[in-house]
Length: 176
Ligand SMILES: CCCCCCCCCCCCCC(=O)SCCNC(=O)CCNC(=O)[C@H](O)C(C)(C)COP(=O)(O)OP(=O)(O)OC[C@H]1O[C@@H](n2cnc3c(N)ncnc32)[C@H](O)[C@@H]1OP(=O)(O)O
Figure 1 (tube, rainbow, N blue to C red):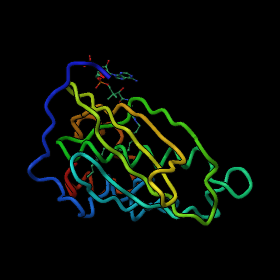
Figure 2: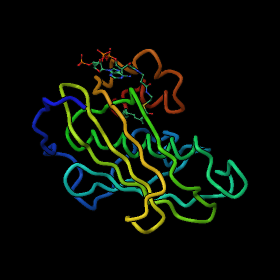
Figure 3: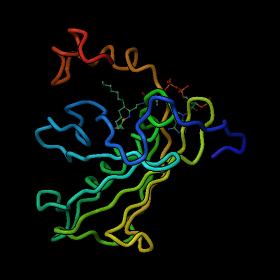
C-alpha cells in the first residue's frame, strides 16, 4: 500500500452500521439473492469502513474431503471485500486479490467474514479480509485486495446485455 493516502470518509448515503447492504447485482454469484448457483451472502455494514457476512459451509462447496474449496473461499472474500467501497462512494471492481489459507475450513461450520478498507489513493482502494469460525482470535484465512473505483455504467456497457437481468438493465431499471 502506498504511503500517501486520501482521507477516508463514509458516504452520507451508505448503509448504517448493522444495516443489511444492497447486493452488487441481483444475480451476483457472491451476494445476489437470485443467483441460481451463488453463495447468497448477506452483507452487513460494520463500524468505520468494514463489512461483515456469515456463510454456512455447505456440502456443495467441498473441495478436499469435508473441507471448503479454495475457490469458493476466494469468491466469498472477493465479494465481501468488494462491498467495502460502497461505504465510501462509487462501486469498485477487483484488480488484485491475494488469499492466505491458514487452516482447513470444515463443511458444516459457519464462516465469519470481515472486510475492512485499509486505505485509498485516487481510485485505488486497499482492503483486508479475515475469516474465522466463531473465534475472531483464531483466523482460518486472510486476504488482501486492491479494488479500483469505476464508472459503473461505462464499465459494464459492453457486457450488460449478457446479464440475467439484461431486460431490466437495458430497460433502464434498476439504474447501473
Ligand atoms: C445495480 C447494479 C450495479 C452493480 C455494480 C457492482 C460493481 C461491483 C461488482 C463487484 C463484484 C465483486 C468483485 C468482483 O468480482 S469484480 C470482477 C473481477 N474484476 C474485474 O473484472 C476487473 C477487470 N479489470 C478491469 O476492468 C481494469 O483492469 C480496472 C478497472 C481494474 C482498472 O482499469 P482502468 O483502466 O480503469 O484503470 P488503470 O489501469 O489506470 O488503473 C487505475 C489504478 O489502479 C492500478 N492498478 C490497476 N490494476 C492493478 C493491479 N492488478 N495491481 C496493482 N495496481 C493496479 C493502476 O496502476 C492505477 O494506479 P495509479 O496510476 O492511480 O497509481
